[in-house]
Amino acid sequence: MSHDKKATGEVPSRQDQPEHVMALQLPQAALSPDMAAYFAKCDEKIGFVPNVLQAFAHDDAHLKAFAALYNDLMLAPSGLSKLEREMIAVVVSAANRCYYCLTAHGAAVRQMSGDPVLGEILVMNWRCAMLSERHRAMLSFADKLTVTPHLVGDEDRAALRGAGFGEREIWDIAAVAAFYNMSNRVASATDMRPNRAYHATAR
Image (tube, rainbow, N blue to C red):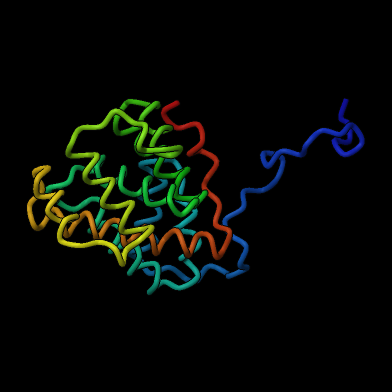
């Protein structure tokens, strides 16, 4: 027997509603063959197309540029591991309180690390985490670059060098942090919502 949730005082669940991508009503453009193949690959590998890609799909050229930059920063060879790059994404998103990126990249940290506690603590307060000197220096730099970028100076780069990072790795830390500052702001401006599947990943 069904019942009216308003009448019973129950809080309606978002699970009862169609999945929300973002607040802007932008129709999907015709995808180029390479972007259509990219969507198909996402669906094959993870079982869905991330909503951030769905949001950018109103313009194939913008989608292609976003995907290319993401793939270069997050997946291409680097002195930073893929997990370290995801950790930066979470810490930047925590500083910016970005719901979409905290959910999606928090799930990635849980999955890649095999440690759900690490994924949760980076979302809530990364300073409480038991981190190596390398990771503490990396995340401290990413946080400062996000919150007070005008205060970043030689001493911050020196701290990264002291933790074992080379010049190219320092560049990569900065580039990943900058990318997520951009992504966070677009997600917040458009009320972008994470795919529901992320919430249950690697719990």
